[in-house]
Image (cartoon, rainbow, N blue to C red):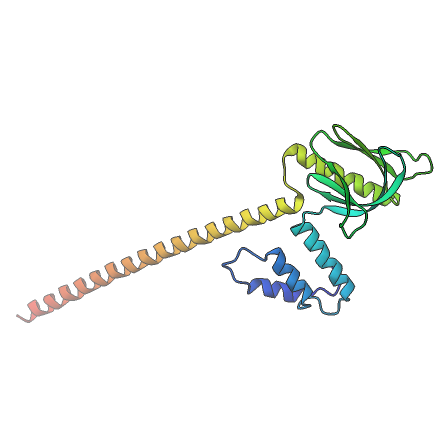
Length: 226
């Protein structure tokens, strides 16, 4: 998010964060970024882009999005569409405002994505093959083409494994780690209480022995006086 992010202040905030909560929610993180508390000196456009990325990935499950050209199935003409990749679907719209959806590519473990050579004046081509349809797509450049192929391939691979998207998997790992740390902390506190109770019991025993010794010494002194 750039050099303006106040990481030291954010770390201090996390240390003082309410331990009873399981970390920050996505909404709370978005609010923190938006209010500028940890992003002083960053331009508003950068902050806005960061908020959109957090919102799209954590709230809407958007893995990748952008404009590409799509070949029609009937007329075979090419039309620019706004593509949105999610964990099990690629949706395409007239524009990025998402108001007019033109279709969906339903992804499952049987789908695949393949690179195509340039042809008919179209460059940066690739195919998304599904059970009943094949979708021919043209990216704006080689870098975008490779990024989309990799993103779709990774999504299909996760579907084959039955695994959640990376950010959800990471969230689950963090949740399990917090649960483990909490259990370890509770166990340590229990052991400390047991040790404290044992020490108190031992102190009471020692105090009782001391009193008995004092009483015995006192009786011995009295006997000597007789």
